[in-house]
Length: 399
Image (cartoon, rainbow, N blue to C red; front, side):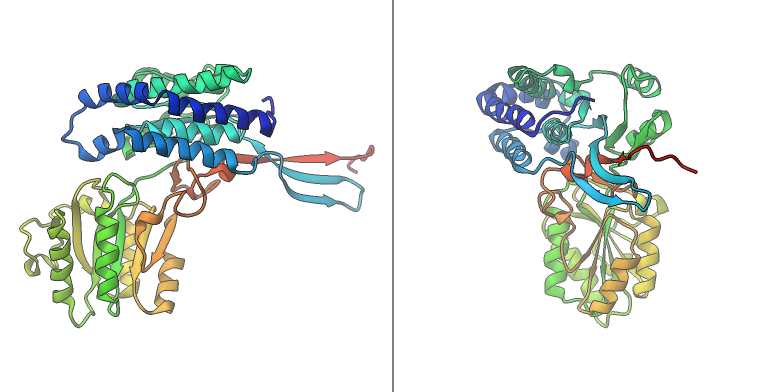
């Protein structure tokens, strides 16, 4: 793949900033077509679909942010000279071609493309049909920005394919394909993993838990839980399950307080069998599958666990491996929880809503990876490169 200079890449991004601003009315009009055709009953997906002036401003901000970052390509990771005289330098290098498959969110068309392009990768965008008009308008802006700077449009491609065509493309792509990042529910992820012939980096489900320890400060508990659950229900970093330790002396009072605070914000509460008689809700878990479920709705489960070890085991069994919280004033317990919980992010007395590239200082992100290779957590600019060894010799041979 041709390596572009930093100046060339930044010139494209500067053009893109200008086009997003000048074409914002056309982008919003295109988005309205998508919104008018969408079923508003699915609130989470509808929220993700909306593009207004504030969302366009966010897109512009994301491009500016990536433009200001250092180029992640060609940076030296290590540089060593061996006893035999070989000089071995390990440098960052582009993946090549990255495909992202995503649902609903038109802003991914900007964030994914700007990150991949700045990292010198080609990007194939497979957006959902519900955002087709919005995505086409945004990709037009990308293509004009590329052409203005003397580059081919195939650096950023928009794939309009149905399920069957996508399946065939994953099995037999018509161009080199080095990495696929599916962003969506488990059905989408399973579909991609089943059919893809190249590496797949999973941006997994949320289903995040909060564990309320026996010594947790209730002021922090309520503030953190309400924010994690209610701030943005469509986010994969939203909270779904709350586990209160049975060993709290005020156990029943805490259960009721959490239920009351969430209910007052419009959250539908489901109780586990152990606590259902102590709660106001009539909705009780009858199927274990609920513990695995990501809600993406104003809905939360309240349950109970027996001790820190019980909480760790329970969360590791059911959590999506995204973000989990411990609420405690005991730093040793917090450290044990954070070391032993198997997720991309672990929190002590803070909301899961911070699992976000911008909030974590990574900047714009392609996705939140719940895989362990090659990276877990926000996939920012620095994570969209691989590495290459440069070996310089003077005629050495291996004996």
